[in-house]
Image (tube, rainbow, N blue to C red; front, top):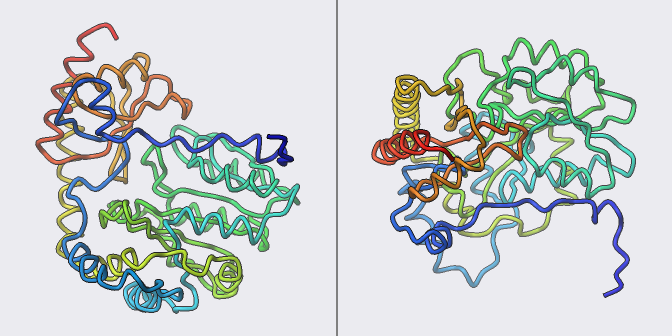
Length: 365
């Protein structure tokens, strides 16, 4: 077909998700594999969320509540923020897209780290704006370099905290110092998808800085700590003025009925959330202690995942681990050719991973 497609769209590289477990098992002739590649909750979804979604299925012939009334009220109460500051999304990715549509025009710039979440770049380029990449410094966000990259064309700055894929974090003191140097018209987006797992009290919690005086947008998700990645539900907290602008471009039914019901129930499931965090923190220590005993370098983290230096081609390790029934994430595409990333699994899954990695590293890959 002879389609007239803008060059900025043709230049985009689609987000490449991993293959389903079932397909990988078919390709490699294995069964009972475990997935430690996508930073998912090893405990599964919140039981209270499952019950709520089952109950909501009786009304699937009705459109969802476009206002997200019950979820926004629940979030406002739990987070102690005004309802007018909350915007719901089909995953936090959806909120990123709204921010791009509201604030970016052709020729504008948006700053992000390198590496970072690919959807930042995709949404920026889709608006014919320019992504400006600032390298990480020793696996951490370099706020000083980001500040120096700000120009008259800068409209948005994306900061992931805790950072993916490295697990490092930004402190509140360093962020407030950085913020004082950012022009007041620049929107600073804090993507806090993994904030529930952070343990260091110095780690920045962006919600404390959201107010009417500065354009800070904090993004959060139910995909990780609440185990609801499959229903795609997230949200942003930001000044009411910005939230009102996003609601002008938000699709009317961007969050579905099951996601709304599940998220409301998940916020009440404190037992599940606490068990999840305990499991992650306990097993993270077990994994990292075990790897150190094996002589394998791994890196500290404030998230539910971490990086491992395998000292050889990461894709080769990825493929060798697949044959052992373990799905990990190669970091070659992120610019770390000898690193893999894994998320914390159950104790049984983590033992299998350690056994498989020891076996694979003992061979030539």
